[in-house]
Amino acid sequence: MTILEVLSKYENKYFNCKKSKMVSYLKYNGIQVESLFYYGLESTSNLIKHMSVEGNKRWYYQSNCLEDEDLEVLGVEAIQSQHSGFMEIFNFLVENLNEMKEIFITLDVFCLPHKEIEYKKEHEIHWVILTRYNPEDQTFDLLDDRSNNTGDFITYRYPRQLVEDGFNQSTKRMMYFNFKEPKDEFNRIFTEKGSRYIQGMHEDFYYYQHIKELLIDIFDRNQKLDQLDYIIDSLILLSGSRYVFMRYLEMIRASEAVIAEYQHISYLADVAKNMLIKSKFSTRFNKASLFDLIDQLANGDRTAYENLKEDKIIKGC
Picture (cartoon, helix red, strand yellow):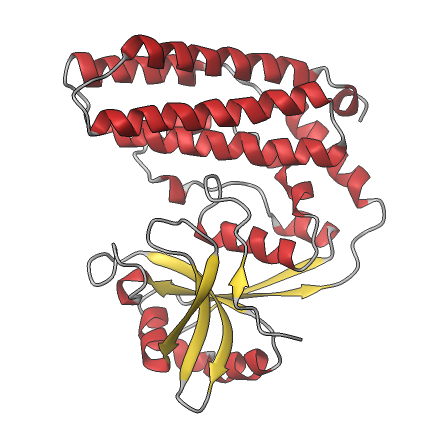
């Protein structure tokens, strides 16, 4: 066995830091993570509620993907625990890291130098993956990404005291995985789970009209300026949602046309997000072009949803 030094990031728009690392780590360990993405088709009303109504950052969005019940179908057991302090888990960490078993823990980004934006400025709970303890200099190796959440998860080496402080200033949670054989016919199980979820969905697509109304307030009336970042975040979430759901559809071999529709929606949401980011730093705002793009998104999402409900794989379960 070799020590994991770089972990390819699977996706960086939809999942928060914990689930992004979980998905990437499980994929690295040969788990068919796409089976878990049927919940990735988020109702747009949830995006409005999370962003515009509650005013939450996208990293706080709680996807239902990767629930324990679904992980167990794939032969994955997630062992999660909360502790009183770092000394309670230190011996466990050293013993298991020495056996090449990676362990997820929470840290406060305030303590992490590689998180340049937040370091010594913001207190926020963040998950990292410990990969090695080095007794000769009492340091830990951990996997994480940069402050802007770009790139793969790479190795950083920090003194034990820094890790201890970061853990004790966090929610003091730990997680690791045990792997066994998946259940028989797990593909059928997840196809049926996805079908039940999709057939039970109700979608009004008001989200797209809501975005246009907010943008009129922001750019025409110079009101609700704080909403612009929430709209951008919601479009990032939308793009990631449709992308991971598209990967689920590929796994169950749904209609190629429906797969292409969700892939295109993910792309359009990304384009709309980029247009809005540019508008933050420019006095020019092409409302007609942006609204036309939002209308394309709305029509595409509605058409894909209707076609999905009629897909023979989804209807056949």
